[in-house]
Image 1 (cartoon, rainbow, N blue to C red):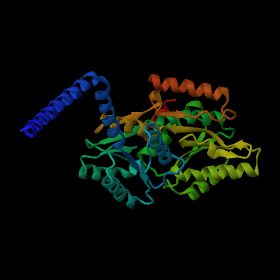
Image 2 (spheres, rainbow, N blue to C red):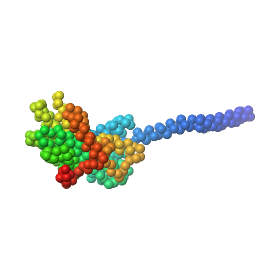
Image 3 (cartoon, rainbow, N blue to C red):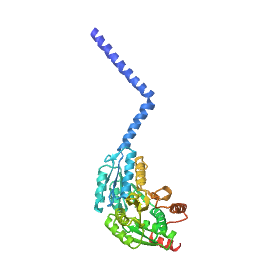
Image 4 (cartoon, one colour):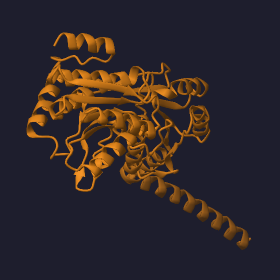
Length: 372
């Protein structure tokens, strides 16, 4: 009988202890709700943030083209650094060596569960449009073109504005009154660079000749070198290239000439990134300026917006002078005189204020020049 009472007593004490423990736990959670509760939410948010991933598919120029592909990759790297991510662990890229690589690269990244995938360059338009329709739960972005899908953000730039400014610099720097433009593939996008450049040159001096040639490739530095050789051989002393990796050949030719004839004034205007370093040859630098197109900022911006559920799907974003999306680099302080810098700033203000509408097509350029 005593054993039975002891067992019942022990059971009652155990139940009371469990009830007290439960009450104590509830009381503790209420007292520390501000700490433990918010801490739990923060951990969940951090896990969700760290799960977000972003990737890009290059155009044929490659991630090291020293131009817009490289700029986009730098932007993705900056975004990754901002959030403690690393290549292959939160962000990555797929290299395209041919246009046939676009669709397989995009599809592979989708299947690797990247939340946001960029197509770098207008040539990826059709591939982006196709995968966006096939995978509506994945967000995409395209640089330099417009894809009308609700899960695609279109990142465009007012390249003609920045090109106008470097055209002003070229016109004020030339001593032969002959400048050149080397384009990659002849089309609407690169025509914006060409048009803005010519308008800038002619606004300073309508009598300056502008030699325009296209390599019909963004990945042919040998063609870029040959075109530059012919231009420089015909007394052109400033060449603006908008040709991706093809422009590496323009720089190579200018540096070859400078190395053989250090006293000759010969210049290249870079594109997309500040290409000052590409122009270094001994104690000289042949980069006059660069039309900087902040693809890196756009990629970083859209990645952050997508991460915070503010993805601009279906929208066309246009980055220009007014928001720092394009600009004229001033790195080469020896080449860019105070007079040239002042002129660049004056024209920049006129464009932002709407006093100057920079042409985007050859037809608009002809009308612009005729009205000067």
